[in-house]
Structures are given as C-alpha cells and as structure tokens.
Image (cartoon, rainbow over all chains, first blue to last red):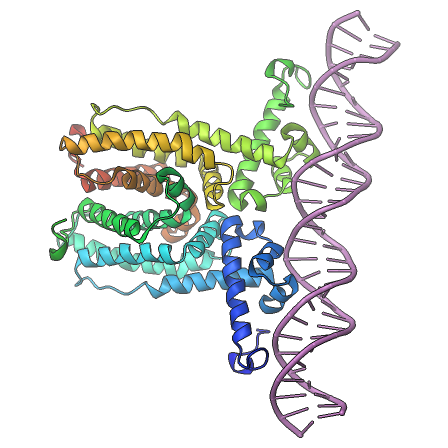
Length: 224
Length: 224
DNA sequence: CCGATGCCTGACCGATTGGTCAGGTAGAGG
DNA sequence: CCTCTACCTGACCAATCGGTCAGGCATCGG
C-alpha cells in the first residue's frame, strides 16, 4: 500500500485529515456512479475526476490506478453485502428468515443503488475480478443456506423447492429495482421510487415468495 | 440509409450477396458479444472487428458508425422482444397465460443471452437510447396486461396483487439467468446451463409464481 | 476493349485514454 | 532558519479511440 495510515494525516486544511477523508469519499462516490453506468472499460478517469470536482492527477494520487480504484469499490460493495449475510440455523422460523432475507437485500439495493449496478456491470462483463469470490465464499454461503432450506422442506415447513433457484429468485427480484431502475421508472412513469413504494414491493415479494414455496406467514403478518 | 437494398447485392464471390450477408451476420454477432460485455462506451470497434475477423474499415463500411451499429443491435433485440408480446384477453386462462409468459421470456434469455445482456447494459447506463421505447410502447404493453390481471383478481381467479410488480418479478427472475450467468455458473459450479436445467428453472418459476399469486395450475400440470 | 459501380482496406487524423513526473505548496520538527 | 514529509497539479507521454479517405480490386453493361 502506498497509502499512509489515518493517524499520519494531520496536516492540511483545518488541522486533521478532514480534507483527505472528504476527497476520498467524493472520489469513491463519483467513481461508483461512473463505473456503475459505463462498466470498468467504459468509465474514464477524466469523467470520474470531473464528477468529483478534482484534477485527474489528484485522483490518481489518492487511488494509484484505475484498476486499484475499481477493486477498492468492489471490495467495499462486497463488505456491505457480507455485513447482511447473517448466519441462520435450521431451528429458525422459515418465514422470519425469508422475510428478513428479502427485506435486507431490498434495502441494500435501495441504499446503494450505484454499488448494486457496479456489481451488476462486473457480472455482466463475466466477473473478471470476482470469479474467486463467486466460486468461493459466496458459493459456500449459498450451499449452507440451501442445506437449511432442505431441512425445512423435510420437516414440512416449506415445499421441497430447489433452494438455489429460490435464492436466485430473491436476488434477482430485489436487485432488479436497483439495476433496472431506469426501466422501472420509465414504465411506471415515476421520477423515483418512494420509501412507500419500496415497502410495498418488499411486502409484495415477501408474500409471493412465502406463499409460493408453502411457508406459513408470521403470526403478526397474517392479515393485510 | 447509406445501405443499398438487398436486391442490388448480387455481385461478389459466388454470385449472390452471400459474402455480404455472412459478414454482416458475423459483425452483428461479434458486436453483440462485445457490447454485452462492456457496454456502449466500453466496447471498441477494434475489438468487434477482431472478433468478427474483419478489418475495422470494413466494419465501418458495412455499419457506418459505432452508434449506428449499436442502435441496429438494440432494434434487433427489441424486435425479438416484441415478437413474443402476444396479446391476451381477460377471457384467457390465467395459469396458461402466466406459464406461457414465463416460458417464452425464459427462452428469449436462453436463445439470446448476449442480446439480453446488451439490453441490460443499456438499462444500467440509464437507457439513453431506449427512453422513448420504455416510456412508450413497453409502458402501454405493461398497462394493458396489468388491466387484465386486475380483472382476473376481481373475478377471484388470482390474488389482488399489484400486476406491475408481478410483471417485474417475472422479468427479473428470467432475465437473471442471462445477465448474471457468470454468477449462476460460479455459484452452482457448472460450466453451462443445460436444457434440462433451464426446463427445471422454468417449472420452478412457474409454480412459484402461480402458487404465489393464488392461481390454480393448469389441469395437466397438477401433479409432478 | 472500355468506364462505371460497388466492395474492400492500409494509412492516416485529431481526440481521448490511463498513467508519469518534475516541481510547487504548506505545516512540523529540529 | 532549514529540512523533511506529505499533499497537490499542470504538462506531458505512448497507446488507443472512432472515423475518414484515397485508392486497389473485381465484375458488370456496353
């Protein structure tokens, strides 16, 4: 790492490393937007620098290279993702777990639409930077959940559907509202999705999935 | 159009326009691959020409410009899409319509994965070339189907779910297997999805959707 | 035989790409 | 005061970008 640690950045501006922190944040946000829209190859450092309001040289001073900046963004998004990959056990309530799964995934797409699109663009390109992650950690996580879903099915708590296809269904349906936002807005004629819209979609997806695979809804959600 | 019509292309090679036809097909296929992987800005004519096995100049001779080539690919994909937008009426059987909807959409993703990813990349970029289509024809089509779904709900043939979210659910779930193919293959550990896999997924999605929104399955699909 | 016509392409163009680098600035420690 | 260190940037670089163009080529009607 050519980057110095945080402690040493007590220098410019108002005394602490506020400038650096702010610039880095600005750069990452701008880069996420541009990479999300145009993919790795389609994004240009000049465009990112312009969005961040900084000279291109300064951007490279902070981030080293285009590839380094891109990888850092991917890792940040994977960290957000991992943060909600909570462990579950076969003793948990299927309805609660599935609803929490759908809700947290929906909120991830909602809170980080640019990061979500960045991820989508990476996968579209054939996942050149994320192959190992997909075939490693993520695959293990899916298999673990799948095993629990199968136990639930054996106990009659849900239909014996293929758990992997079920996980993909939830992923795709939630991811859709970030990745295909332009299509959703164009077709529904909205300017943006409100919090109420997102809540409505979350409830819709939850009911569809629970009912679809034969899971009894939670007690306090029985009406509505 | 700088392109001459088909009749005039009886010239080179073996007498009829076979060479031209073959080259154009090769160019379109190569361009679809490259645009799908890297988006409009990220794709380069040199890469497309290399994939097509033709000099860059020849590619421009046939297609005029990068933008023209891209638009032509988008239009071809929209034509494929429109080809399966068959009209339905409120008198049709909901189960049949929904299953046909899921199956045809799944096969479109299956048969034209590159075109599907091209479309996805276009939407990811904010649909700069497809705004009008989304806000026009496609929106009308969605609204028409939504109206019929609502009639079915009133007649008790299905639950009163929001038809637009339902359509998006089917779109996202089917599109997923083309757009996120790299993720699907990485996680499942496969090299490719077989016809049997696709059929299994289609059946899974159909049952999930039908059961999820309270539609009775077709008579000849009741078991299995 | 003759242009005429349309297919094809190497050479080239200005603009843009990611990245380098020398040098400038400013505060901290001696 | 000077030096050191980290922050910052305009000027520049080779490579690549989309696109142009002059000209080679083969085939045609005459």
